[in-house]
Image (cartoon, rainbow, N blue to C red; front, side, top):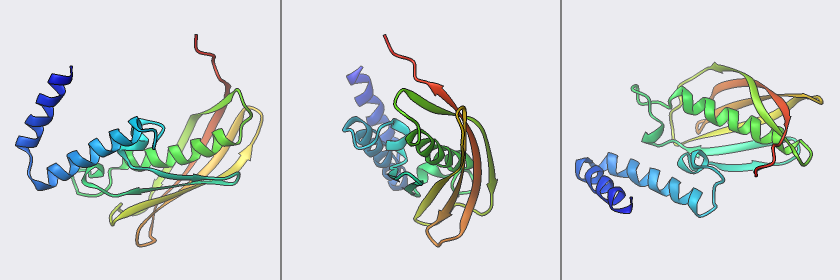
Length: 164
């Protein structure tokens, strides 16, 4: 397996120009972030998420890199959705007692402007917390301060399953 990975990486490097090499570096750095414990999941690591959370909000910052580009050279809407969902889900889970988790049951996104610039900032806040559902909203801004998306989400409260 290790030999195959080295061969694949060597092939990718030989096919790459400078911009592609920077994207490969970004991806490998993100994987390292996960493996070293800096980020809790691979998606957090790949997106280089910087997450701050308290009892009222969750904020996430990510740098805009070519990894996030769609065919128009702007942030792909799926990455925008991922960061919005992550911010809301993180806050929802923070608000629950031990042994419970929140999973997304519905999410609505209004895309308002192109994701361009140096970075993206997302902030999620609580709208409603019930026994079985939590409703949150999140806004995402690009580095010049322009809002690029607004989202709302509903989350089911579920009991965590114990792994055997």
